[in-house]
Length: 240
Image (cartoon, rainbow, N blue to C red):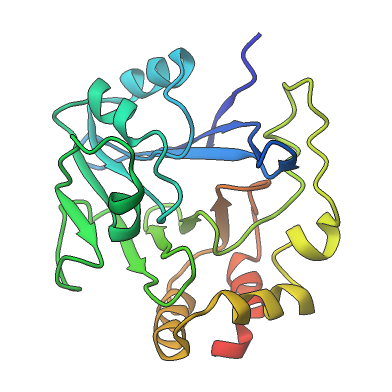
C-alpha cells in the first residue's frame, strides 16, 4: 500500500504528504504541493519523490509548467521531476542549485542569483518572497486565489499526523509541543536563531506579514487551516 496521502486542500491546490524521517529518526514528514494555474498549467513545489501516484495526479491536473524548490536543502527530487517534465521551468534558490547532486540540470530561474524583481511567469497566480537572511534560504509563496501560504522550513506544525497516516512508522516527533508547533516562545526564539541577517529578515518577514492568507501549507507537519496570519506574526514577532 502506498504511504502517500494526496488530497485537494482547497480548490486548485493539491498536497502530496508522506513520511520523511530526517537523519533516519526525526519524523518531520514531507510534502509537495501542486497548484493548477489559471492558464491551465501546473506549478509544483517538489519536496517529495515523484511516485507513480504523484505523477498520475499531476498528469491529471494538467501540463506541469513549473518545478520549484522551496529552499537550499529541499533539492533531492528536482532531477526526477525535471526528467519527467523536461519542458517545465526549473526554479530554485541558489543554495539548492549548489547542493543539487545532479549537475546536468539547467535552472531557468535562481533566487539569490537573479535580480530581486525577476518575474518567472507564475506571478499572476503566485507571489514569492525569497529569504536570503534565513538559515536555509527559504522562499515563501502566496497562492492568491485561495489565500494560502506555502513554505518549507519557515513554519512547521508537527507532528505530521496526515503525513504518517498511511505509514507503519509512528511518526512521533520528540518534544513536538514546543519544537514543532509554529507558535509560542520557543518558536520565536528559533526564528531569531535561524535568522542570519536581521535586516533582511525584518524586510522579508514584513513582506509576508503584509500578504492576505489564512491557511499555511508547510512541508513538515499538518496543514494549518485557519489563523495563519496570526501564527506567522507570533512566530516572527521579533522582526515585526
